[in-house]
Image (cartoon, rainbow, N blue to C red; front, side, top):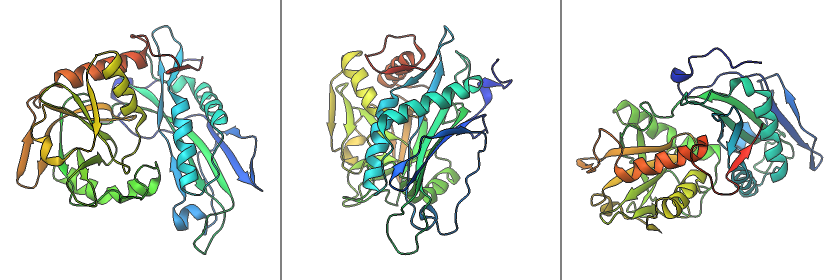
Length: 341
């Protein structure tokens, strides 16, 4: 077997149909044994719970080829934990955590030829998701579900990779206090699509959302957590019950403290503070870490001292260290790297 014949350095962040995907069904109060399938299509009844009441949760993680030819995943146990908790919040039967990791292994092995080669800058993106297949018409949880994982090779999420981007403060809200902002559910992302289109049309890479209650505190963007560096060189992490608990963000916090020996301050962050910060970045599985050079809020423009040409010192070091761990160039903390083959 050989790698697929693709221009790996220019594949973009888009969906491609690969060889196999995993599917398991919940019926009669339990999950079946699960299987790999060639069929990328999902057939649903017109009144399926996902179509009527948006019962769905999902994850995102990546597989990497290392220089020695081995294929690994980054912290899949954390994705297993998060989708388990997301499913419970959405009144869905959680997929067992140990089976989640085994299913990831099966999908990666079955699509090994699609894992981009070492040094290409591309990765195999994995999308685990669970949704309601059972028929409902009244507002209630469904009684049947599917858990699936597909894989697709991708390049950088933002054009330019680690080149600084400009973002805009949205006039819309992403999530409410006591809502589902901390749950990785499709409905949260549907909420962001309108403002995302507006931002892209205006020439910005992303929206920055403020808290819905007071519109004073920084929350996150449509697809990533926001992080900052203050004037003292401290890594500042916005904290809120309606921010998604990003695995990448938690990994960055560990890297900052234990690899770069930086002070980390996780707390609510007023937007008014941001104009005094030195650096800003957006982090998540898809983006890894994208530096932000500029934030626009109506007539107010915040230009970070790190500039629009390249990542600031701290964001650059965080990006290089985390991607070095993921690619096998830097020794990882115990348990972070899951070897597939």
